[in-house]
Amino acid sequence: MNNSSLNNPYLIEKYQNGDSWYRIYSNGWCEQGGIATTNNVKFNFLIEFKDTDYNIQASSVTSATPPSSDCYLIFNLKDKDGAKLIGRPFPASWRACGYVS
Image 1 (tube, rainbow, N blue to C red):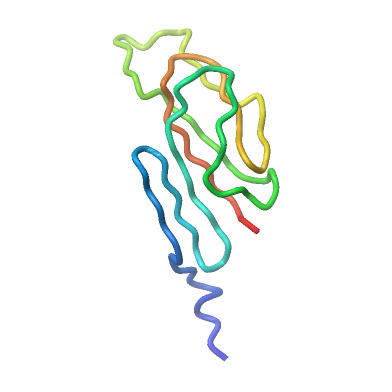
Image 2 (cartoon, one colour):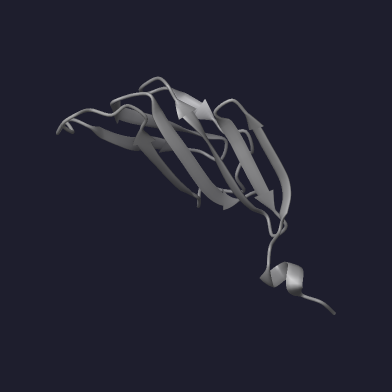
């Protein structure tokens, strides 16, 4: 039996529309991302995660020179189907990684 697909996951599906995108691998791992444009509003993932045990990161798309001490971005809601980002400045680029059903 060849277990190479278990040890070496391969891309089985990908999608991009503007700033929204995702990639799904043979082992169920999913990477997805996009742009959050509004503070404190839940945005929905293109693909729902299996649970809330996923990693999500965000960074500002704008560049302040010099960097301001009031630049912060945090997630105050994390569901299987989306998240809510608060802070400033916006817009913010986000990327989430985890397993899908």
